[in-house]
Amino acid sequence: MIELTEEQQEIRALARKVARDWYAPKAREWDTNRTHFPADERRRIAELGLLALGLPEEYGGGGRPLIDALIVQEEFARANPLSAWPIFEASAGPARVIDLFGTEEQKQRFLPPVASGDKIIAITISEPDAGSAATDVTTKAVIEGDEVVVTGTKRWCSGAGHAEQYLVYVRLSSAPGGKGMGAVVVDKDTPGLTFGPQEELMGHRGVGSADMFFDDVRVPIDNLIIPEGGFNKLFTAFSIERLGNSTMCLAIAQEALDRSAAYIQERHQFGKPIVEFQTVQDTLAKMVVDVEASRMLIWRAAAHAGTGAPKTLDASVAKVYANEMVKRVTDMAIQLHGGYGYSAEYEIERMHRDAVGWAIAGGTPAIQRTRIASEFLGRRFDQRA
Image 1 (cartoon, rainbow, N blue to C red):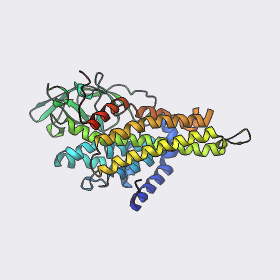
Image 2: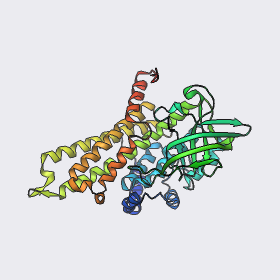
Image 3: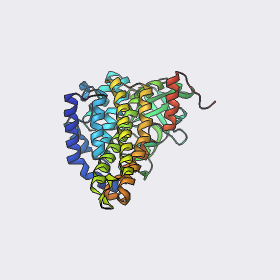
Image 4: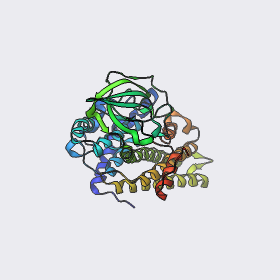
């Protein structure tokens, strides 16, 4: 069992109060209207010292271990998942790639605006023909003098059209697979970058998702964060993102569990609270076990990571369990609520819609299982053979 320190408990309590008082009342409205999280709200969270706990203090962050950032993210996501997105991006997203592998100049330039809430850096990997097969990326980046010229199409970028900057996974040479890949930061308003219409997704409403078109987009060579051949670095940092993903799942499941526990003690049928029925007790117990097991897997991986990246195996195990757990728990919550679980008023259906999205984002459970087998056995498997 991982026990939180007194300081961590204080951080958690502050995050819970802010999230419950300010963002929970807006959750249903923002989901219904597909409202994008306002930039001034990002700055509010930053001013409270809760936005970028995982980034170093010298760049405006909190300099805290990864687990501290995830604790804060969980509290915000429980109250209103959309409010947790900027926290997710700042402490577990592409900003951490720059933190871990960028030059000192790049860190000084890119990280302070993230920590202050002035900018979000979104990650864009997937393409029409490159999803789970990330190394099939065809978006090209050609170095011409002191510039990098990017050409190609990206898809399924969370935050596309809304984020101020993008960490773009690109192919820098014809070398096969990940050997020719790297990553470059592109500003939203760079000439040649355009966005398709916003996708209307089942869940994750307000986050934003759209195709991105790069037509000879030119950025300074100083924006090249990971040069050719650094794909392994990208996926080392991506293990942090997997724990951010897992924490969103944990938060949704915990909230569904807590609301279900309250409901079954209030709801009467056949002359007594439905919690008195053994089948209801059995369902609740399954939910408790799932949530607690998921938290332990996430916290174990985060505790081992410290201020760096978790082990790939730990992150993949946590993610595959959390992705499948949250779908089970929110489904059981709907069943316990009966018809009310299917009603937007009770928000359980929203939680289930969001839950499904997390099992797709950042590497599906099927892909994670392949990764787990590979890491556990210490060998690689060629999916193309």
